[in-house]
Image (cartoon, rainbow, N blue to C red; front, side, top):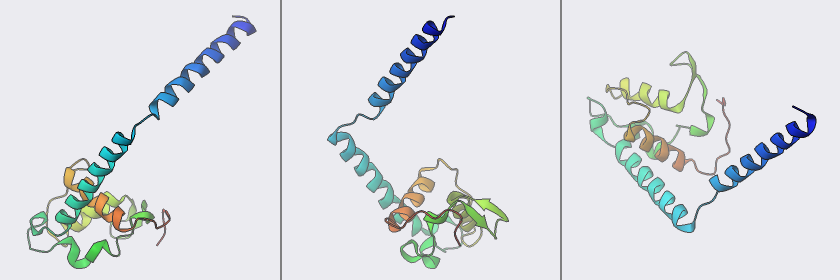
Length: 135
């Protein structure tokens, strides 16, 4: 292949990439409204799960230690968690709390309750700057 052919292939690939990227970012006001509605529903469900004694086996709820998600600091994850002995995600710490203080079974990462808890915790800290690794 000559330089001219290679240049044309590169330009064609760049044009295709740019077109695909632009299309991926297109959405309507109805899309935004739907997505916000679904997010707010997850936040509401998260608040319910956060106060549900059925998440564990001993009647303890997340909100007893963390009223209104206090002292959860989702903006600092991932970070080293002494209780786990490693750098961990917020979901891993949520499961630690479910298994230990609540004496329950851990949630899968894609469990709607896990997603809802994370949505609720993060919403309570909306506006706080990200600070991964901070203690």
